[in-house]
Length: 289
Ligand SMILES: C[S@@+](CC[C@H](N)C(=O)[O-])C[C@H]1O[C@@H](n2cnc3c(N)ncnc32)[C@H](O)[C@@H]1O
Image (cartoon, rainbow, N blue to C red):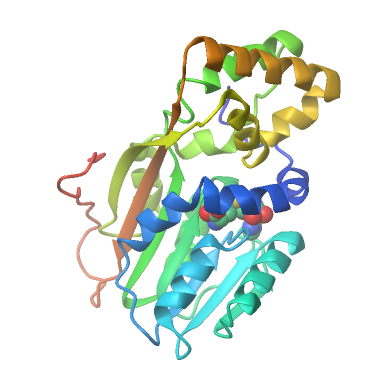
């Protein structure tokens, strides 16, 4: 699988996935947001910018934390995702949430006014990640934080290799465009941040076992992730065969959990901009540096 962004149709993948992704975002991916939240120094009244907000797992969490005197601005390229986030915020009475259409490839320079700028599971969609990270940083106020979370190397082990093999057997050459592999190496993410001028980022990797209650629970994971792009390319008949092959393998090997590898970077913008960029490793974590 290559690290090429070309060929991955982000809009189709996430547009058709938006309601499935909502379920997956809370039931499956929600732990990523919980993990990021544990690193943020958010207080009531703070201002948050959530890029690539999707159906809003971080938007909702941060809005609850900053309270009615705070402000959360949520940005996504897909109106379907923004509609879901808007609705979820309204259902919870979170009037501090504003959603707005935006493309992380064409961001205007920031005004350095946000306490937290977050991008979960989204930076790898940027055409020029250095430029986008640099833009993100420009929105962070002195003393504020930038949080970036991406997919790590050991995604969905041990089932994903079986899924890929089954896809390849159906359509040789399928799936040469998995954007999240661009940042699966924590050193790569760290270098991109350095190049973007984001100083002091703490980059760490984590492997989180997620329960797979039954073999049938695998397919909703495919549906609620970027793997959906492969499913669409397979077509209905081949998709059914791939699905069956995965479910049989999971049953045969008595798999009851899958690993979700993630890479997380958190940087605090210092008041002074002097000095060379330095990345620090976090202690007690599965750290990259
Ligand atoms: C994998 S989802 C992540 C959603 C959410 N942050 C989460 O943690 O579950 C990726 C999101 O990035 C959005 N996205 C992709 N490319 C984008 C771009 N160029 N600008 C803004 N949003 C983009 C997609 O529409 C999708 O909602």
